[in-house]
Amino acid sequence: MTIKATNLSTPSERETLEVDILFVGAGPANLSAAIHLAKLCQKQGKELPNIAVIEKALEVGAHQISGAVLNPSALQTLFPNYLELNCPLESKVTSEEFRFLTRNRSFKSPILPPQMHNHGNYVTSLSKLTRWLGKQAEELGINVFTGFTGTEILFDGSRVIGVSTGDRGINAKMEKKPNFEAGVNIKAKCTVFGEGVRGFLTKSLIPKLGLEGRNPQTFETGVKEVWECPKGRFEPGYVMHTMGYPLDRKTVGGSFVYGMKDDLLVIGLVVSLNYSDPFMEPYKELQKLKQHPAISKFIEGGKQIAYGAKAIASGGYYAIPKLYFDGGLITGESGALLDMSRLKGIHTGMWSGIFAAQTLMENLIQNSGFTSESLAPYQKHLLESQVGQDLCKARNFHQALSTGLPKAFLHLGIQQITAGRGLIDPMPTQIDREHYETIAKAHGNATAQIPELHSKDFVVDKLTSV
Image (cartoon, rainbow, N blue to C red; front, side, top):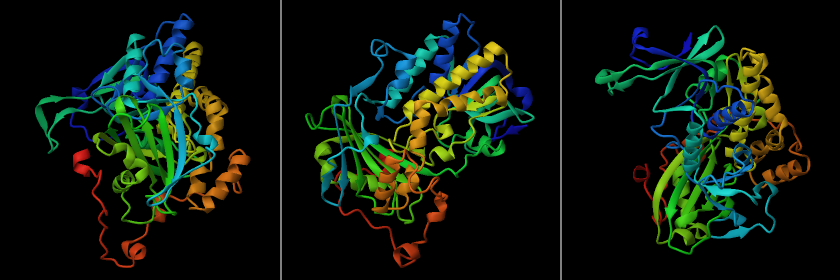
């Protein structure tokens, strides 16, 4: 039994590869799991199991978006000497501020919200960090296969027994080309899914096995640009977060600005998908954000050198699915392990990988068969850890923001002094699409047109960015 995509190959054309542990996705979570598992084997004098990591990108890190703030706690657990190993961290956070933006002005908060404290954290390029983790994994004897897309989950009854990879050499008409190459069936004793948000396989796996969390999952869109700026506009390690403009009071979201080395500046905007206005377009809102004086002062005279966008799972603690099942685990953002109050998911994903590796090691030692019961300690230990406690404290954060400003500030203040509980626990969650309005309702006229930007300063059209 399989969860299927379209493959043209026949069973007789597909080879079968058998491994002990298969990691689907080479992001920070799965690479951390593979690395920690290999190190545990070394520490206990156990032979390294046959570990395979498959990644759909042509190189590790190619699908990661550069520019992030990293809590180094998990990295330090994996590599206590990470600085000596030349881990590609841009800079320690040197200064940080939180601002509320109006159309033309900005107001600096006299007190930095506790969740926004980044003392001891690093500004980093996530693509470079992931690439570095991939190299560390390979040096430990782990097989990392790039350019392999998982397209089908293989089952034996309700037990996951591996995945099939996609065929190569298919044209736009779904016909075999001369260089056609059949995919491979990779069978494993345990399969770990770390594909990121709404991963192709994981999004089908969760409902099929009934792994859904207590609350429905909600999502946000993050759009980000990297600018090469004139020298001296900011220090590497500068961090700014904002609320307000260009979003209205009913739209959940905010922006971030991170200063990196070589005068590179990351500018990003996160917008919840529960916005009601059908004319809302996060990319266009990012263009408006760059025209604000608080942002334009950095990038005037500079140029955009990179762009990216991604989905973000924002449902919080109560939307985390069951992360274990017969024959497999879920790690990182595939499991919605994002701390929305801090807008951080790299270290939480890496910690999930570390706890996954510990559970995998216990199963290998005890020969437990990687059953749902024997894999259950993974989620228990993760949620009982400091990372799990932080996720729990942010369990109603997104829901509070969804009430709109200024009401959201009341909820957030009470949540802060009640360890996340707030006035209602859990706060109700609406599926994103339930907030949508028609053009006629939102703008009073069904024939209304999307308004043009008032200024073209710093605007880069979407086609050019892509």
